[in-house]
Image (cartoon, rainbow, N blue to C red; front, side):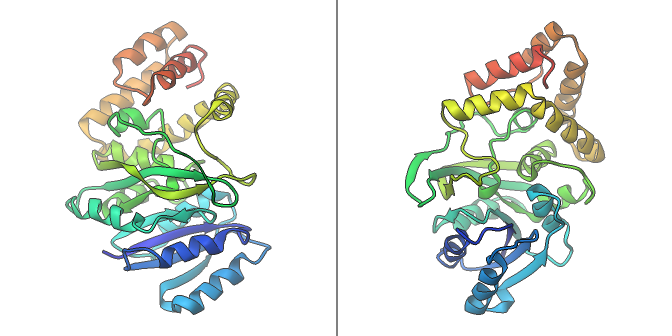
Length: 305
């Protein structure tokens, strides 16, 4: 199985060498790197070119990104027809992959018939700027299906690997789709069409936490506070607006169960606050934790979904 690594870069010179070196260390050897640079003004591009000289120019391809933000940069690679492989792995520029990341993903994807959309994702090891261990990301145990995906992204993009059938579904969204989060829409789409989503409890990535992080780890009081603030500023609702808009483009691909979930979610978003709270309990829509579901109820009541 050849895996195309989709690396999104922008002024990542400080950390990118460790990430590139972790590709070389992979136990799964059949990979090819596509790096889309979004206009770096530091040494990022030079480092990638040096890496190409090291591993061979046939294994490294450097592209110009769309310069519309990180999500657009990643999704632009999904839509590039010249990028072809058996599977595709999103990669951040500042992480370090564990040695068996691609092997674990390939093992799962090989177990799924190629005509069925499949998505692999996993837990992460949070590390500091110096790659020193902080903690392990949350262990999610409830099913990774559309009822969860529509209101929560448990699939961190830097752990994701997906097959061609999943990519084909993403292509149906259209390259001009306006989306803020490439990983969340990937989880939503694959689960919505009845694809197989596997959340591996074994971490595959050392996820670096630093001041330049656009998202960051989802653990602790500070992370909870930040997400509550995003909720009440309307970020969660605006993301849902984006997702609902693009899901309309692939409604014919959705499973029967997903169509019901989508209909219920659409209806409850239009309901009164009290109706929203009761509708949520009957809509097969859920987050992974008790506190997460409580937050979802609060968000529904205050019309923030």
